[in-house]
Amino acid sequence: MKNDYVANWQAQVKKGILSFIVLKILSKKEFYGYELIAAVKELSRYDIAEGTLYPLLDRLKQECLVTSQWIEQPTGLPRKYYYITASGRDTLEQMEAHWASITTNINRISGKS
Image 1: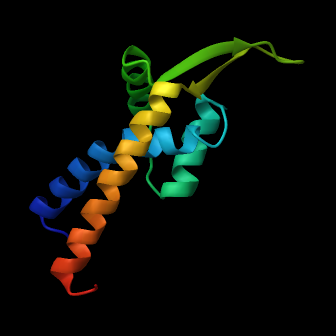
Image 2: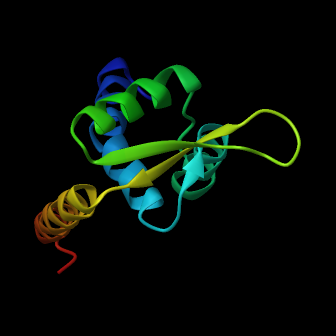
């Protein structure tokens, strides 16, 4: 059973890497909101709610890391698709380098390298 400290730490880690996860997923292809929620859940095993994803996407848009476009659908309502920008790709590269450094350091501390 997790204690409160561990639960809080895990929540903070998840919050801290969620933008990294979203940018990484969007680097593969564009997604509409619900589809992106499903991809995050499937690929990262993190549950993410609409109330978490959409504010994050808005922040990423304000930082010019993602952009969006409404696309008409053959049936039903149009969907808003999200795309990573060139600046988003550059940011993602820096995040990946930092993540690799963190992983290397933790493995070193743990005696795994």
